[in-house]
Structure formats: structure tokens, C-alpha cells
Image (cartoon, rainbow, N blue to C red):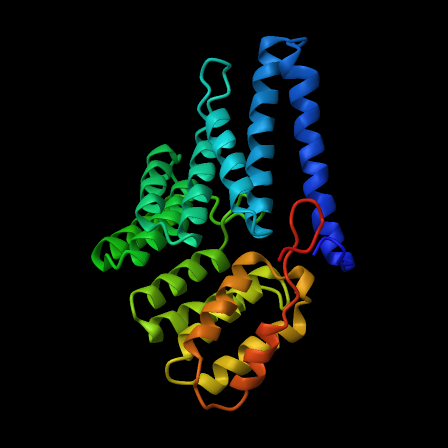
Amino acid sequence: MGGVRLADGQARAAALVGVVHWAARGLLTDCLVTGHVHEQVAGGLHRNVGWLSALMGNLAFHLDDHTGARAHLATATTYGTRTRTRTDDARLTAWALGAQSMVARAENRYENALAYAERAVAHSPAGLPKAQAHAWAQLTSLAGLGREQEADTALAAAARELEADPAGFAPGRFGFDAAEYTLHQAESAIALGHHNRARSAAETSIAATAVATPGWAAATLVLAQAEAPTQPADAAQRALDVLARVPAARLRSTSRARLARLDQVLADVPATGVGGFHERVRVLVPLIDNHGNAST
């Protein structure tokens, strides 16, 4: 479908990927490959390239390019652990490993996801970074494997790390805020079959976000998944609200995956709004690839 015209939002997403690629290539080619730079400066550049690689991996994942995500995140991990060039960065290493765990979970490779998560926890500095590794990577992987007691232990560890961190939550691409923390709790509760607990956590996550943002869409769709077994009409209407407020070009791959899971749960359920929801999912405009083309 290479001839499909892209919406403005899709074009901006593709352009952003291109800009990040250009920046990383420039740093590598001009400074690192040629070697025309002082060693201490090179260390800082290596670290920056590592974080740019992490950003590229994150962008690729949310554009549903898992192959690109795995490659960029592996590169980020390598740069994070390079002691030879004085770029050893535990925060970068832990974040990149946590993101690799996220990609593995999206592919239903939960044992691999847990292995990445355990490494992320081991590399994480104390406080917020370790709390993020416990909740974002370890808790969700354990829940996906049905290991409830260990999942509860991971959640408790995350709470202790947050309580001990004087700075508290930090927003941003590589940060960790209250909305994300409770979103992971909600999604893990669903995986473990605790839908009432999931509803409460998802509602808390929604309250901490702005309407129509990616975080709001994620939390709202998780709440819909929690409602689906007992309140299918409410679940369908909630998902339709997301589709009405968030243009298809701005729906991340993770939100699309949640929509697909909800669509499966509501299959053949004779509730108000379910048919309309099925149709909206069926005609949803596809994501794009890194070249700016609509994916098939």
C-alpha cells in the first residue's frame, strides 16, 4: 500500500523518526567513527548516541516496527554498558533493557521479557529507575506468566523504591509517572484475572492524564478491557470514545493492540454498541512504516 496518502499526523511521525535517525548518524559519523574528538568528549557523545538509540527504539516500537525496535534497543544497551569509553550509564542500560522487555511482551515472549526485566532491575539505580524496572518490566512480565505471588512482590518492591526516592515521579519519554505506574498495575491485574482491581487502578491512571493523550487512550482502553466481562456495553462505548477523540494517525501500536484484544473479548457479545465498535476496529486506518508508507 505504498501509494496511500498519509494524514498529517502520520507524516509528522515518520518525519520524527527520520530526524532522530539523522541526528544519531551525524554523531556517529562525524565524531565517533573518524575519532576526531577528545576521549572525554567521545564518552559523552557515546552516551548521547545510546540515548538516541533508545529513543529510536521507542519510536519504532510505537510505530509497530518490532525489528527496528529490537535493533535500536540492543544498541542502546551496548552503549549503556561501555566502560571502555567511560560511558557506563546504569540508567540508560536499565531503561533499554526494560524497553526490550516491553517489546518481548508485545510479541507474547514472556519468558524472554522476564529475562530482560530481571537484568533491568539488576542494572537500575535505586529510587525511581528501579521502581520503573520493577513495575514496567518485571511486574508485567510476571503477570503475563501467571506468577501472581512474584508479581505482588515486584509491585511491593516498586512501591518501596518510589517511597524512598525524595524526587518522586518524573514525567517525560524516559521518565516514570503516576499514570504509567497505575496503568501497569491495571494491566497486570487483568492478566491475573482481577478485573475489579484492574478497574480501580485504570481509573486512577485516567485521572492522572489529559484527555486524548496517548496515556489517556491507554488507560481508557485498559479500563474497557476490565469492564468487558461484566459490562460489555460500557466497554464498547469507552473504546468508541477513544476512537472518536484520538485520530487514527495518533493511535500508537500499543493502543491498537489493546483495541484488538478488546475486539476479541467482545466477539459475538450481543450488547449495545458492540457491533459499531467491531466495525470501527475493522476499518481502522493502518499504521505506517519507517519510510512513511501505510503498513499492510
